[in-house]
Image: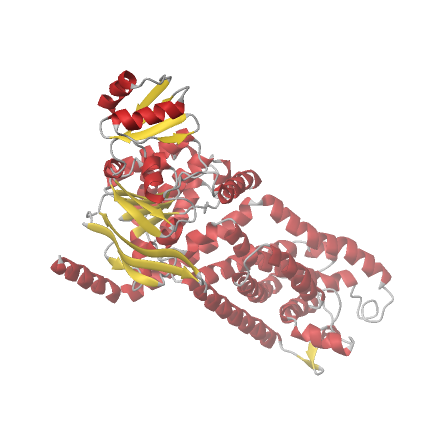
Length: 330
Length: 296
């Protein structure tokens, strides 16, 4: 498989549903072999964009080339060259793991001579060999996800698209999915395009686009994005927060923001700042923390609001309940 | 960069040139695996298999035996050459099993949509018509298996079947199964939720069964009902089954004709009935294909 120079190119993508503009002019370019993350809250337009790139939706305006092929002109050509892992489960859980993969191999025309070998390889790679003969309804959530990733990789796509691949999984399982994705990338040289609304997850990506209300508000490596916050984040608590805040502004030239009793400030060099803070403040300093900015900080800075899971979480909760229910039911 | 793009495009063009043969092969493969999955699930779901046999058995043994005894003196049965109601009903019950299994089998598309699997099929780089055809053939096969299992009961209801009869019944049952299964796929392709399924059950399948002549002769009915029974596609599939089964039991053909399906008093030849059923199936399948291709 040759590594593509440019895996995905999109220009001015717009998707309108009547009055609602779900995607409002998205431009992006994803290099071959990259893990590219699409980060944003629910309803920001992530799934719509990924659906356009996967040819499942036609854009209202704009163009996109995926694996060098125009998504509007040759959708089947695009689909043969990409792997898809949907947000919602799409396995037949009355079939075994291997049977699900065989089904996929047939409808994606994987040649008969290599079908078995390819299936074995993917099962091995995602550590499903032992359970390959069991019906999928006996699988855990993480195993189902891994099987879907194995299935998406079966026809050797150049790009793997994953829509919220770790949604509803526990932290260890999420970690293991990430390890598998990294291994796939290094073993197969595949490009990975994924959406997530987990900030901590986006850090695994080579590059991230932060999307809010249908537009990309920032694009870069996690470090580049964090640098936009302006250095380090220092928080402190004090029994006299008003006095402390005033003194910090006057003596240290930084304006802290106050959340409850905690003062939060962004400074260029946190390691040098903390000793000065402790030394020069007259007001009592109870606790001080110093940390590198997280993508949460970036998101807050860029959009003025936080990605909170509970904010748009009802849909996810229903989805997770649906998964749990279906797992039991079938 | 631009030459690279040009190369890429020309290789794409080369690829599309030998696509026709590829697409045909890919479609056949897709039809096969969609069919195969249905059969696999059918065999694996022993409960469903058992339950779907229980219903025809219940009809045949309880309903059939009960009515047989009370109809003994009636003119159309007791008097007509020793034909019992249960013998009359037997081919109808085979038809019923085929009717229910075919439509249920094909309607599993609705189930697949609900549980997400349909998405895996619809995004694949295959022609959507293979989905409709594969599903229709899957339903046909399941219904055929169901119908053939019921043939084993023939001795118990006093129906003698020769090898030749069975060989005649198989294609006739297949045509019925195909017609109804295609009908099911066409229905399911337009249906978005499981709710619609119940509606189909109560307002389509049951009336189709009752009007099909599975339980009573389609002659001498009130005018409105005569019209409805002739509009029921299942009638044209069950009548040939009955003719073949009854002619084997040595009944005079005049009696068989009297019990059978007529239009304007004219007896329809078996081949014409099979032809009507086949045509119905093909039209339904075409509707299903169009409907699958249209939806996003």
